[in-house]
Image (tube, one colour):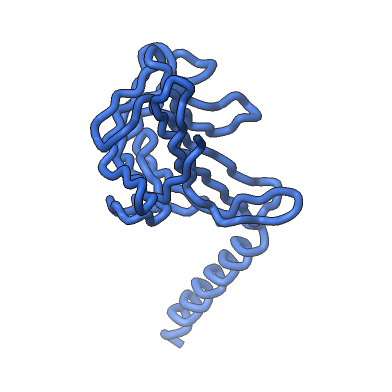
Length: 200
C-alpha cells in the first residue's frame, strides 16, 4: 500500500507527458521555426550563404516554389557587365519555411549588388556609390531593410574565379529599415560560397 502513491504519481506523469505530445502534434503549437548554424567559410562553390541578422542566424533554406513546381534553393551569383565596361557582382539568397499550420509561412530574401568588382578584394557598399543591399523580412507589410542614408556593407571577395565559375566571400555592416527610421539591422559574420554565372 505504501508504494501506491509512487506508482500513481509516475503513471500520472507519463499520462501528462503523452497528453502534451498529442496536443503538440495535433494542434501544431510546438511547430517552431528551426534554428540553424552558420555554414563554414569555404571557397569551393558549395551553394551556401549565411549571416547573423541582429544576432539571429539567417541561411538560404527551403525550396523555391511557384504555381507549377518547386526548385532547389540555389544562391544566385552573377557577374554583370555594365555599359561603361565595369562589372557588378550580384548575389541573392532566399529563405522559405512552411509551418504545419498552412496559414503560417515564412518567405524572406537577402541580396546585394556591388559595383566595380573585377577581382578579389575589399569593397565598401554605400548608396552614394550606387550599390545595393536588402533583407526582405515581410514584403506584404513593408518590413525590409536596405542600403540607404548612412547604411553600408563591407564586402570581402575572397575568390572570383571566372575559369571554374566560383565566387566566395564574407560581409558585414548595417542596413536601415524601409519605413521606420529608428530600426536598423546589423549584419555580422556573413559568408557565401557559390557558383558564378554571367550577364554580358
